Length: 225
Image (cartoon, rainbow, N blue to C red):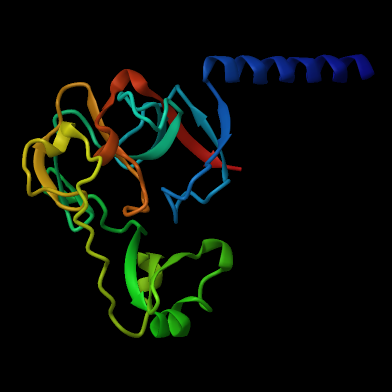
């Protein structure tokens, strides 16, 4: 009996090793908050290279640029595929004229007075989920989920970021008035994919590092464990 159990254990270890080596099954953790609230920092996932990602799937890949950010494997949401018409309006993506962000719980930035921050924010969000920075003596820049903002008793406006620093020439060389939250429409070239984080104002994604070549896509997330 011990020999049978030992052989089973050895077989499982070999299977896990081969699966990871070939990419059939791979486990990893998410190191950043760029895809929150849907992929939490340090959450663990299983992925596979046997399934090609579809639009809105989370996938892992390597960017095709030679960036100062390095050539690490990245996890983000697939927004647009080759041939799609992509447009961004106030931080929300439209693909072939359809708002693909509809129904997704996304995270955006807000500039809030300290009194509002103290009354409605700081005590109503778990400490580990609160991303905020004091930007003036009387105000905070806060990253909030749409689901949370929709439940606030008053309406708040998103922080308007018209930043063009470090934006990719893949997209932004076409029109000098485009910025990271407003651009397009553009048609994705052959073999090119557009990825973005769900924390739209806190993600270094295809807006900054360009389209991703199909051969750079390594696999699709399956489930959390």
